[in-house]
Image 1: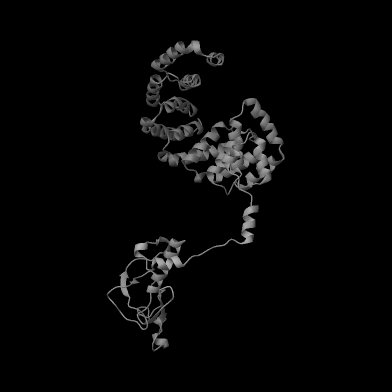
Image 2 (image 1 turned 90 degrees about the horizontal axis):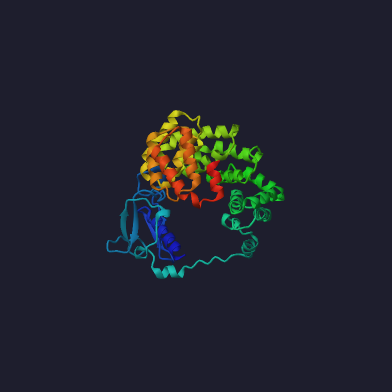
Length: 406
């Protein structure tokens, strides 16, 4: 509080300095010199408003022009009934927001500041409002529940903005469940009396919430298994179409993942077309390889060949930043947009062969399927995968064997 008071008083001191030469200065109890303008020989001809260059103009006119800071010193000029002060010209703007309190250059002694103590006592009404106001529920607290119904119960008891927290929390809880438990919890979610109300809140808030909250909500809604032809999903798709220009790199990544898992429909096709235009404009600004690969998997096989070429060039420029996982996923990304890049596939094949130990079987199967779809033949890659499978075949589980045979 002392810093704020000191800053306020120091600023007040600066404004008091902006006064004309013809004046009477009277000290106030706090030690400041409060100027009182005295105009001599007043007449309509010599009124200050008629003389813009005169010295008797209002100090407000010169508020952001050359000003003076007054402090005790040796260079003295006398005014009637006042103590000597020194005028130090300062040719810069006085902006109260940028001024900070410094005890070494304070125009007011520290003792004077200690005497000024502002106490704010809360009224009974403020205390009562603070005690009765419900505590807002955040995403972290919601996601600590054990069932989807717990999240819906929390919404029914005290709905709070934004609704995206509830959908994201439900999807976070559902990911920790087994398949059977998740299926049962989804049935309870659809039959919960607060679920319809939550969907209505989501549709009303879609146009005013942050773009990333909107996309995370759509992703959670799709992952929770809410049918794609429902009013909620279609409304979110339409709102994302309207606000697609607000997407940054993180939103671009989430939107690409959403379109990858959604079935084709009119709104999805329009949104994918908008994504292609947005990617074409922002492709050289993408920094993360994961975002680049997510975009490649979501633009579709019927994307313009020029866009595919740009994505290939961007991937080649980022090749030195590829991790082992990025190299493994590049095969699937190129197959998703039906574009074969021999240079890119050759470099990724070298990294896959060099780090094949411990590679999940599912990823190896995806690589082989992508090579088939792209009609890409690399004998060194195929031989490396075959040798690894023959070496680790005896420790596989029955499910992994069935995946390889199937």
